[in-house]
Length: 238
Image (cartoon, rainbow, N blue to C red; front, side):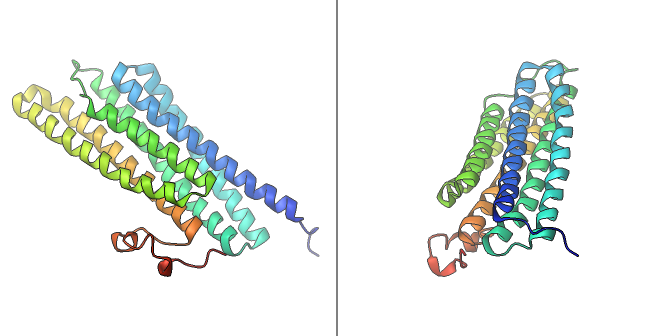
């Protein structure tokens, strides 16, 4: 014999709990981005160590959210928009966890840089960090508000981070050509810039998921993005 039937209010509570826990995870990841850049700029070893440890919290939250999603899928057998939301959460937590891992990578490179004389990271790496952190904050807000237009703007901002990365790469290459003594430090700063660029890519993935959740439209590829405003390319929202 099956257990007692769950009420609609209980089901709504489970979905709300899923949404809230995802936002908490997102806020932890956003803080890891900010702390990793602050640790780099201030050469703060203690902050870097704390940020590396903070990744454990994100890892646990990923496991918990995966479990909650699977539990809801098994018990509720959701359909339509609820099914789309739950399956996307399973993907979102993966991107968030990877962003946090990249923040750990930044801290690890920063610890390597700290044993060397300082080579200033320039203005573009901090700018990249602020841009990525802002993009993540915006995509989480778009997720809460179910705002596809806001998510589309985040996709466009990925080009800003790409341009900043190209600038950093050329500046660090010039620094290495200027003196071989700069190679070790410059390559690590280049890695940090690349981590930030990859963070922006993962955030773009999140924005694409928001659009799919709201409009039912898959915009993961450039050809589909050209049709963002064409209603004939959208799936049924129900």
